[in-house]
Image 1 (cartoon, one colour):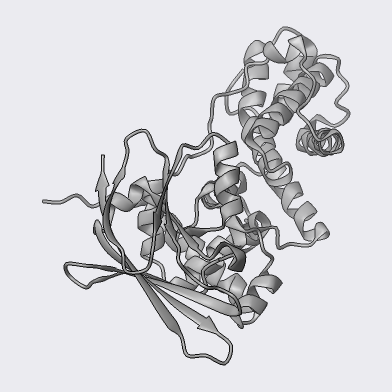
Image 2 (cartoon, rainbow over the protein chains, first blue to last red; image 1 turned 180 degrees about the horizontal axis):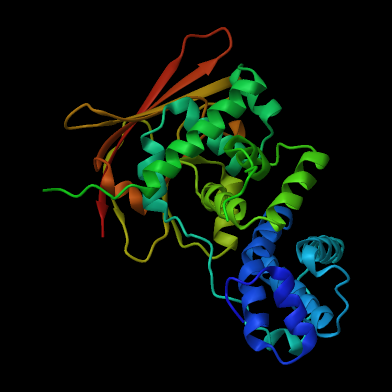
Amino acid sequence: MSMAAPDAELVRAIAAGDAPAAEAELCRRFAPRIRLYGLRHLRDEDRAADLVQAVLLALLQAARAGRIDDPERVDRFMLGTSRNVALRMRETDGRSAGDAALAAIAAPDQPLERIDAEALFRCMRALEDRARRVLMLSFNEERSADEIAAALEISAVNVRVLRHRSIGALRRCLDAPKEVDA
Amino acid sequence: MMCANPIAWATLVDYWAGDLDDAETEAVDDHLFGCGDCTASSARVAAIALALRSSVPAVVLRSAIEQMRARGSRVRENGFAPGDRREVEFAADADLLIHRLGGLDLEGVERIDLQVTSESTGALVSDIESVPFDPAEGAVYVACQRHYAALPHDTVLSLSIHAADAPPRTATYTILHRFL
């Protein structure tokens, strides 16, 4: 099984039986998407990790049983399952129940980039004061653009523009090699 | 294969800031699940959003300090009165050093600004408008963090206190840091 095979080909190989390489590749492709969905909608790293495990388990069970109706759109199956599992997790306000089968899934080890406090601080200091305030109000205090606009007496459109430009500037700063003293 | 119709950076930032409506959020989710390229871009925004979410602001309320303690952060606290000039140690086993800038009558106060300068050079280190405060506390809490070691260690913290129908008052604290 080629690692460049389309998703649908991987799903069909799993349905045909005994295709550990196809299973691993499908998990590798989708784990980051499920994790990001979990981080965005569950807002907790542990619960996002649980979501990855639960959705990959559901995927493999369905694929092995040939229950994925449209292998060409396995991404739709993943998103639908992610939505359902995340909804249940939100309703129960807790982590998913332990399942021995979860441990059998080798969730790919592709951790989200970790930005250390020192690097973030260094790059934040390069921004203008208003940009720093917008970012902290948006992401640290979790205020909406409208609320920030009212607090800073600027328009919500300006808040959004300032915010995405500032995140872009932070990204470039964080990606740049750190200057070292000669 | 490159994405033929990538999600705009600005949309990804709004998505992670929670500033898209439900339909827009679902549309982004739909696209991300089918697109590895845009997932990678989204992860680059997410990493910053999550870092900002977990970062500690320079000035905090007492309630935030107690929350950090409850989560296991090792918090040390030093109290200062206006006019104090004192050395403090940021111990190796501390995660956070709180400077309690006290001795303030904050009744009727509408806004407090904080300016930090270097005592030896006069250079401006930080200038923060409208810091959070609780009038009943009679204090402002500065959350000194280990990465502040990159800043001048001899700091003069000046609070500019604004109340209605009164000229601004100033309270100054000189704190000399030793990072261990």
